[in-house]
Image 1 (cartoon, helix red, strand yellow):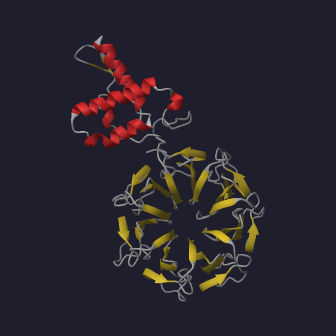
Image 2 (cartoon, helix red, strand yellow):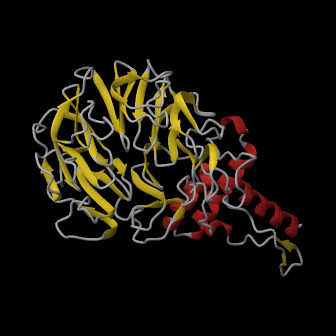
Image 3 (spheres, one colour):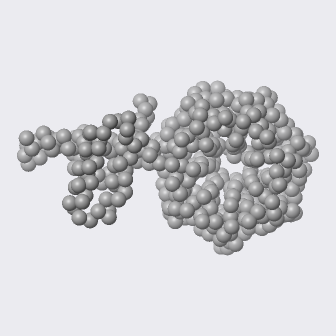
Length: 456
């Protein structure tokens, strides 16, 4: 009698591990000092699991058949003998198992992608995963991670986050902090570092910061409506009227008020001021919206985007914006990243086919592809060498906006890395494309041509 009951309890515990209630039990069990209370709570959870109809329960974890089983927490199949002679499946310590699972009971509010790492804001905390050679994950190490890790010191209060090529920045309670690669001064700290493994305060940016964009080797932020940039400036991408690099935030010429959005590319920068797009820096591929190849150290206007612009994003050598719900792109289109059906440079903004209306978000921070949210659906275009368009196809590229497999509604955010992409769907993060460093966050290093959920 005792042995069957003991085995049934173990089975209940295993099934409970797939529910949000189990996550909450693990979260608060440390404060449940009296063992009687702990046992009582566990019994309540067991009754809930076995007596409440599935349709009325709190949302539970979902597991798909193509999930990588090695990445999802599994129970040990080994057996041992208890004193009473009953079979033991080795799960006596299951409630102490903190291995990552594909638990979906969380709420992500922001997503960003760098060269080979990704970061997000999950329930107010900054989480990062993927490549960490320069400390860009911010977890006090330089060890890559195939699952999200919490950025040290940013466990709560994070409102904005941006991943550059090899560094990351975030806003916490109005203050800006950066970490990772800092060889060009892009971390904005008062002391010179090759790289930082933990989030460090940016000089002069301890309050009033509302937006941040980490480029390849420079960074820009909006503080109380004024734009400031720092880091590498060999093409004038800081917009300060010179090509002198700066290790600390410096005011951008003619951008001291009214700035609402910022986008930093590799060697150029764009912003929205009073509804109009302004760009500066390198113009080798017409990313400043003109046929002249000369760089500009100060902001220039972009033809056709002088009003009603609500979003701006900068890629390696191209840009995209949203004006009156339509996506417009310009610069190099060699891989179809402008989405206008061609593979050529465009010196002025052109409409993206398939995203000419109802677009709410656009992101081209990856090198050679772009993505947008159109009527709640995710669409991508450009280079697809690693499946970064997420169409379920391995075709080399697409020159018009193509639907991302399985993401036809409820998409609230989207981000592009060099060869991967991520999106937030109903609060849950899904990523696709190249995964050599674990930047898809699913516990493996296997690439995917379709979206897969992160695990943690």
